[in-house]
Length: 271
Image (cartoon, rainbow, N blue to C red; front, side, top):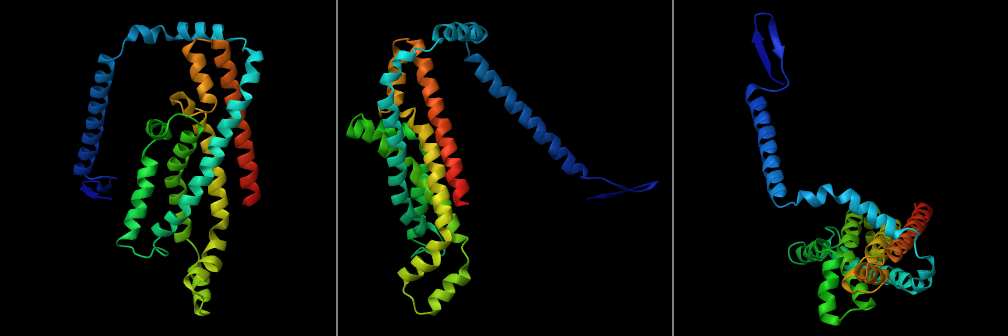
């Protein structure tokens, strides 16, 4: 904190004159960038449709109510497919994420120079692409259906699970590992008895948390043909069957709420 001299004695200021000018320049630059971006967005926006949006939304809502309750019989199987996509995709992701996490952690990787960067690249690559993009790519490769949705969810979840898990591995208590190593245990015994018990609660929490996220993501995979209740939603939207759309949205909401409740209960029991 700079001290400035004056006739009345030293004056304390939070910033020097140069720091204050730099701060104001930063704010001015930020405002200029914001105004430029807003101008670009405004030029490409049809404001007539924006101002008309409340009336359109009210019209759609009036068409969508009441929901078509008799359509519920056609949603049980799609919502079951959605749950299976999330569950099987999460299990497959965990199976693949565990070795990647051990290869990425500094204290367990066989080579910090060669293998660890590859493991980190896998984590970043799988986390960087949205599950919808993975689903589009996989549908082009293996065709539409539930299997493409499972693989898309699995690939998308590898990076998430592996990142949290390798961070948990790096934070373990090293003294336990040293004690087991001192007994002459092999590398695999050290891992089984010194590392795995310490990360087991974190692993269980990560698995449940990711499954909860995947329930939400799998509900929309059907929009691109990857199976599940999203396929019914896409068909209803294409035919402007708004009562069916509202019912499907209610079913999706109910499924997400139940998955959130189950996830919270399981995490509470683990922690």
